[in-house]
Image (cartoon, rainbow, N blue to C red; front, side, top):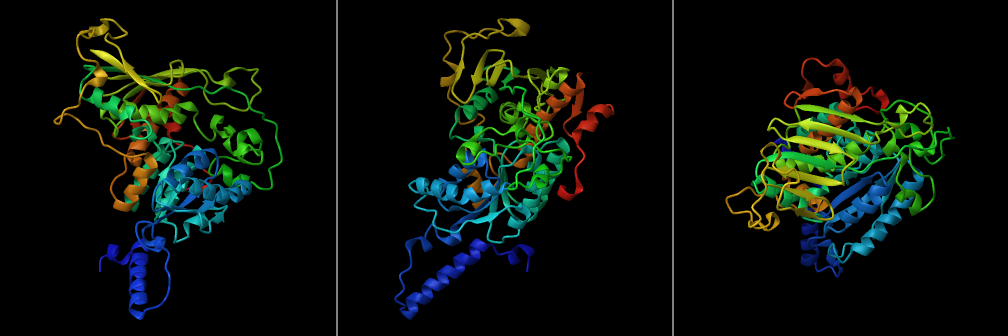
Length: 481
């Protein structure tokens, strides 16, 4: 017997058992009334049992509600190192499902939801088919590796990793395990922002002529934060929260709000602005917009070959007394092997601008637009569009032209992949490559000079020791891969 034949899925087993039991009841004439939900598309045998690892702002306001909209997907467990958040989560889940029952075929929150504080214990639960990981960035890769190694499919919030080394470890682990991992790059889905796919298709099919430059505008992060040492709250396993990163004293602005109730959970956590746990907006929003740049170029499995830039850091000021230390105002650039130059900065409006030889497109989560003339008039061979030409955005992509993958909302696409075992819209290798590009921009800002990258080997050219040292970080063994 082949190995795959032995590993009969829980859903397939339950499906067979349920049908056999139903037949027995009919044959024996048992006067048992079986609820309709036991059979059909929402039957237990067809339901994907999901666990929420992380019950903070993004999990409760984004991941849980989107998952709950889908028929046959049920959150049966929650996990958080903060016991207050973990204990609140079951009621949050049931409330979300009760509101979404008209969207998911009537699946209601009438089941027991198990609470965990240690995700490793959760991963031992054989009833759990998949997990969504909504944790601080420094936990993404390690927790996801443990999840796929435990046989769970994963929906992972961006960015893929804290370092390029960790991203490579994660991508390799997913490939080896055969599990489905979807990156939370929701700009790729037709819902809620179909304009990103449309813009990428127009660029791919030459509607703006030869692509010359991509401008990526990102939000910024201010300095600040209270760095006063505080006692660790009794409800928080702070050492485990630090994970593989170095030990450092607790202060609330380093972690997340301890205010009780939804208001505390929904507030923006301080770890986002601490380099020990993330890289700032260069990965926070960069993972979204640089991914779109790669998609439009058809370079989702590659990366830049040269990167250079500069940034202002709060700690550059000798008088700075705040806690948060991620980059402030910055501008960095990258050259790709196809000759396209990508500019990434928080001095431009948030969005992605594609500038070609015959026009430009700017796309963001609100809208997108074109002009009849390029903003850089006739510079470097750039020529204005004939004003009599149809607007670029009304151009129809022909049957024989490039059509990018149509996909549902990102969580729905993930759940479909879990069922079909087909590749999701944003597999981990694509997520790793966009994250790597973000981190290369960060490295260039740190070393304050041009760096030369080989996307194939994922190494710096010429033995750049300073830059190479930033491809990884030391990790505490007790929380390592």
